[in-house]
Image (cartoon, rainbow, N blue to C red):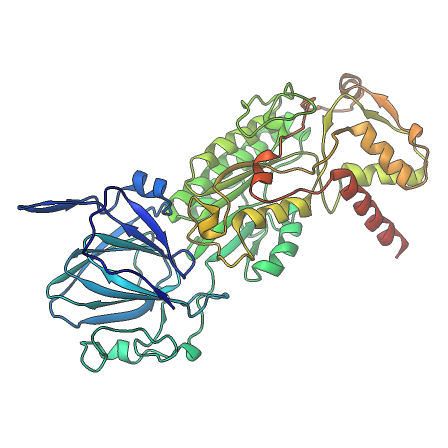
Length: 503
């Protein structure tokens, strides 16, 4: 059980946010300016409160309720949205019980509220209030519109297992018949987290995400292109986003060279830019967290080829694919709750450079491979694990109600993160030699060529490539995530190819 301190006896000179025994339930000490005429306060002040550590609520509805008599008691109700509760007039005893799935189910916090105090109540945390004075007026800000079809989770006010110490006993309180009939804790079905939706679930990254999410978010909804085509902006806007807390967008047009053709150019912009912009608008409108994946192709490759580009490096795409991805990045950047994961040289299930080199090695072919582009491989399961880490999934915090501080919610701060394998950067030719050596071929069977020569010998359009694709990993490492060495991961990947080919 958690206990707060009584309100009403202390002035505050600045907004302060206090944590409680319930993850994500935050108490806000407000600044109240008073004199003989009365008082004034900033009941909701986004900039100050977010700076103090409160989640950026994004309210869409303001409701006010009134209790005339002492002893009126309401609850315990857990709602499917976040809520910012404050007292406009009067004095209240309030209690909260965590009714979400997870290790803190049943945790309790209570304290007295007055005009000096407000509380951020995350989705799925039951809240209840008992009037300790006459004429109590409550203010509620919520980040979703009330709906008659919304699903609530209820708990009995008198449940012995949570043992809320009501100042006015239940037999003396004024309680509705409906509230008296709520179930005890052992009968409550915990509220599941807001839904995680994966777009592009049939692609290489989508498959890796599905595998990782099966362990930490088994209720994730996997959406393939047949259900939602990101290239159709109208379909994205019209998709049913109700009940969605996080959208992970693994859908993209990644045919880099085909993007240089007239048809490919239109498709690349439709999927990577227009569709992503529609998705960003939906995220703002519906308040969900948006995870999106970007590329080293948004840079021109002139950055330090060994140190790498940081997240704030200037966008300077060379080709259509990079330009369309950069446009999508800009759209995602305006979403209040977003993670933009920028990566390079992606390898997963299906056709990829490593598998192509393995096939050439097996068939006795001695290829010429580009030796003037430098980067690190990124395996799709690395990207998937980094995504789960940033979202805080599997660490006791659901995917909803994220704030600006990972320590409060289990999430990392929102923003852009570079995610690739770690270790010594390599050229494509060096990677090819490592593959050949693994399969018993002489690495020198791979000869060097230049990007210019490779492009001149191609049978169709070739997109310009950044020469330097090394991305600085310091920011994501600062969150506690350590990407694996890409050459070690390559060896493990090739071992799996061995197992498959030998099966």
